[in-house]
Length: 238
View 1 (cartoon, rainbow, N blue to C red):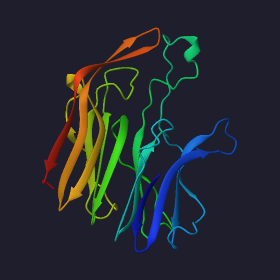
View 2: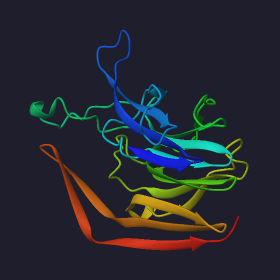
View 3: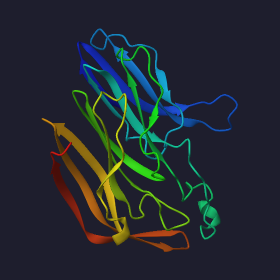
């Protein structure tokens, strides 16, 4: 769960299984609720998104300011599924190797009573993971890792990725173009767990950068090549 406090109202988002009528399986969903009496009572949970990543469901972000509520998450509505031929039969229940997740954003101008239509932030980036969001006034920044056009037929989040950013300067109403902060996938590097904080108009970034080698099996073998560095960057450009 993630939560935030504004004007004596506590807002919470979390993920959980959400039965889809007529579906053979359940799907992870993003839920929202708020309390206006310091946690004594809560509104009925509201589903904000019903097709999210089950194995990456911790990466849900919520922020609140004078413009309203802001939520971002990893979504799988455009996911493509491929099963690798070299995975042994006893891995038949494993997750597919190709995931094609996307980053989505949604806002509420009346602090959770109603919500606008969600927006695909990572449009054009075919594989996106690990979103982080920061809000300062009307400035919203979302960073994530991903690969726009991977050379592999089957892509996994441990494959080489770049670091991306997209921003809004009007409280989430419109969004600028996608920018690339780290152009390192072509050199075999992966970016993991980026975090962004906006302070006085400056962007402060922390992220992990390193290399993986994935070898064929039986099964998948993930080899990490040290060192894995934790990097900090600061940008004041707008």
